[in-house]
Image 1 (cartoon, rainbow, N blue to C red):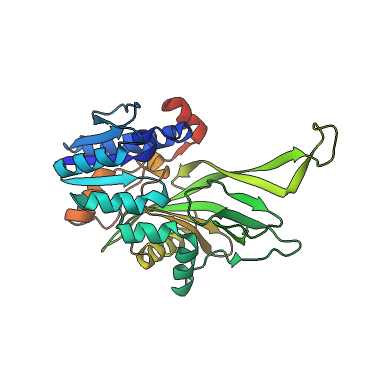
Image 2: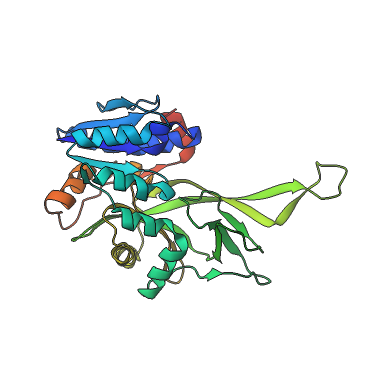
Length: 325
């Protein structure tokens, strides 16, 4: 079977900082499908992966055209792209072949954090409360209404309403994610520990002649995702699985999904990623089953009742930069 895997950073070369993470996911998937005897095609603006996948010359300008042409010749396809673009690209993919990922409608819903949160709350799934005004002695997460990962996300003490951004209450707890295959018979794969870095943002004090005297502006810290540990053993494993599966079902997700969760006194769903995530890189190194086989079984056959994980694997985004430079 010919399979198209299109990863946005690799296919466009638009953001060099995202290429190591994109290459890790792309190579993981290409190797898995390739080991099953399938031919894998992937658009690239220059970066080549180590597997036997077949590169298709691409660029930021031609990325969509390359997907369209390749999809016509492939039996199935899978896209990895920023949430704001995923719905549009999956619509294009579905015109010509079988989509192994989320539907355009589900991708669009997950991309809109305000709509996504409202649907989860309506279904009785705990999420951080969205707020419109800051209060003294409290902290908040300020993030784009449509974004992926910890992109342009900050921990703040106070904030002003800003178009395109939302603020929600900050919850203390363990930063985790659940990897799963969503569909008619969903399959939880692993609980992952996420390594989240909070970095204070410093700026020169206004009116100061000496710019070396810095201060913490509005008590702002940037938030950076820097890898994960898979699997993460916790007594809350089944509760986390149940929460993630409920979130994916509520949003009508399909294919590989990553559900970001803060485990406080209970699991709170922070984000639902309707596409492969970086945790896949670690998961593939401890899961006995092939992720490629699971994605195809989810669409064309029947998934197993469970998967087997052996050992654990930890990585950092910095390390990915060394491996996939």
